[in-house]
Length: 601
Ligand SMILES: *[C@@H]1O[C@H](CO)[C@@H](O)[C@H](O)[C@H]1NC(C)=O
Ligand SMILES: *[C@@H]1O[C@H](CO)[C@@H](O)[C@H](O)[C@H]1NC(C)=O
Ligand SMILES: *[C@@H]1O[C@H](CO)[C@@H](O)[C@H](O)[C@H]1NC(C)=O
Ligand SMILES: *[C@@H]1O[C@H](CO)[C@@H](O)[C@H](O)[C@H]1NC(C)=O
Ligand SMILES: *[C@@H]1O[C@H](CO)[C@@H](O)[C@H](O)[C@H]1NC(C)=O
Ligand SMILES: *[C@@H]1O[C@H](CO)[C@@H](O)[C@H](O)[C@H]1NC(C)=O
Ligand SMILES: *[C@@H]1O[C@H](CO)[C@@H](O)[C@H](O)[C@H]1NC(C)=O
Ligand SMILES: *[C@@H]1O[C@H](CO)[C@@H](O)[C@H](O)[C@H]1NC(C)=O
Ligand SMILES: *[C@@H]1O[C@H](CO)[C@@H](O)[C@H](O)[C@H]1NC(C)=O
Ligand SMILES: *[C@@H]1O[C@H](CO)[C@@H](O)[C@H](O)[C@H]1NC(C)=O
Image (spheres, rainbow, N blue to C red):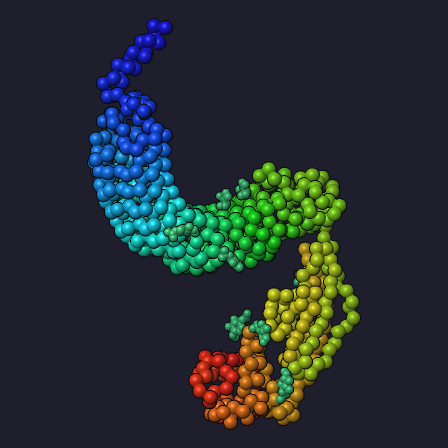
């Protein structure tokens, strides 16, 4: 008992001379020289705060403004918390004399404007929190004296504009967060003052594109977070130029493909988070520049395919998180090498447990599934089984594929006339469903993705529109899946019209050499426009004779020349321009310049 009293006395004696009492409505911790007046309905800084105070908490009161004199009497202050008041104005020099101040919190007030000089003198400040205010604009030199500031939070304001020199003087800033404001762009120039910035977080902004070199001067930046930019759908290839990031996170945006081109400058990136973007396919080599990447997250992106070599180039990949997607499979061929992989999250995907997943199964005891073992969604016999539930002997009963078989192998030998449409069927069965590729006589691969005059329809049928003599030859259909492949041949002979037979002005005499639709379309328009006899007559009557004359003369010259050199095909380009209709002299056309590649046959 006496001992306790003694301790108490000693504390009182020690505390006594330091403390000059405590304001009536506040709690004081004399040893720490801390005064807490939280939630006391104060409308002004209370009387009686000891001058020695180091930590002052005035949060959750009803303070309206901070004037120069308010805190001047406490030169030892190191931390001041003014959060959750109704402060709407800061005077210049509001915190004058507080050279020891390290932490200043002004979160959740009603500040609209921070006058230049408001933070004058705060040369030792390391943390400033201005979030959840109503600041509309950050003026030049607002933070000029804060050369020790390491962390600045201006999130959740009504910011519309950040002036170019707003961040001037923030030489020590390491972490900056800007969120929930109405900024429509991030100016590279205002960020350029933050030479020592290490982490930049930009959340909940309504910016639609990342432009070139926004971050160019931030050579010390290591982490960049871009989260919840619902309208972001474009990342310029040069947007990360000048940066040397070790982690990058672009999440909850409207990006529909991996912004591969912009990764070129990120050779030191080790972690990338692209979760919650509508990215449905990972194209081959999408991450090839990220040679040091160790962690890749693509959670809930609606991902439905990782194409062969989709993760090509990621030779150090240790963690892949593609949980909650639409993946039916994840083939070993998608990886650079699966040997570096330690952790794999593929749960929450409709996985088909066939031979394509055998590689995961074989590693199921060493691979870390982060507590979420993948579950089979197909075939029906094993639906609902987790991958770890299979015994070694069961592997070859279930995890199998059925090699493709092309049905209906009737020989297809077709003779067509030039200009006709031709198609060859190639239907294949197999498990998983085989992919069909056709090889042209010129050894060109034609897939369902190659658009244009020669294309593969979803059922595997090869379709050739406007057959040309050069299309003649043997076509090979290859049906392949993880189980193997099957091939099949078809031959086409296209009979050309000798040119003398054709009317020179008929639209069969010339064909677009391009195999893509856009040009085919415009070429057809062009042919209709120039070479149809009626059009020529009408055009002549309307005064277009010079233009058409020149075009036809060229054609004739080339025709004669090509005859002279035998049957070789010649490509040439016709470029012409015509003006928008100004008077009755021009016909139906729009204005502009057009360029066409033509092939003479
Ligand atoms: C500012 O901080 C430095 C190091 O933290 C310290 O040495 C210096 O005394 C501080 N200045 C004042 C006026 O408190
Ligand atoms: C910012 O946007 C929000 C909603 O999008 C709107 O309510 C607010 O008025 C805007 N502020 C300014 C300063 O434009
Ligand atoms: C996202 O992109 C799609 C088309 O790609 C568009 O329809 C949609 O409006 C975009 N969303 C936003 C918020 O911009
Ligand atoms: C980039 O950062 C890494 C460390 O993350 C460092 O080793 C490398 O030298 C830096 N490269 C440049 C060009 O600054
Ligand atoms: C990736 O980003 C999402 C959304 O911002 C976040 O929830 C998740 O924690 C991030 N993952 C990692 C590993 O940082
Ligand atoms: C994978 O992503 C989910 C969702 O963001 C997250 O909860 C989980 O921690 C991540 N796993 C790993 C290993 O990063
Ligand atoms: C077809 O399968 C054989 C082995 O069965 C293989 O050698 C060949 O490379 C495969 N061809 C294609 C195009 O996949
Ligand atoms: C040109 O082709 C169209 C259809 O593509 C046809 O209707 C028209 O008769 C052809 N004109 C000539 C002169 O052959
Ligand atoms: C179509 O042809 C034009 C001009 O020849 C070319 O610039 C364009 O890339 C081609 N498009 C495709 C999808 O091949
Ligand atoms: C070609 O023209 C047709 C109608 O003229 C149009 O519907 C189609 O979208 C066009 N295709 C391309 C690729 O421009």
